[in-house]
Image (cartoon, rainbow, N blue to C red; front, side, top):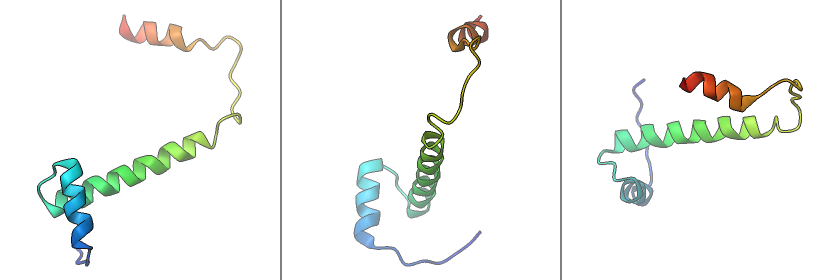
Amino acid sequence: MRTNIIIDDDLIREGMKFSAIKTKKALIQYALEEYIENHRRKNMADLKGKITFSEEYDHKKLRQNRIS
């Protein structure tokens, strides 16, 4: 989707400095991806204590099977 927006130049410069990203387009894409990922993590954290697992659930055993 193509769009034209006005963004504070200081924010762009600071974002490029911290990320080493060279273009505004790439910086904005990265920032949106990070924003979305942070909100997904937050939503997962909201589930803490609301999900109950079976007594037989063994996450370590599942990981071993994946590696083997």
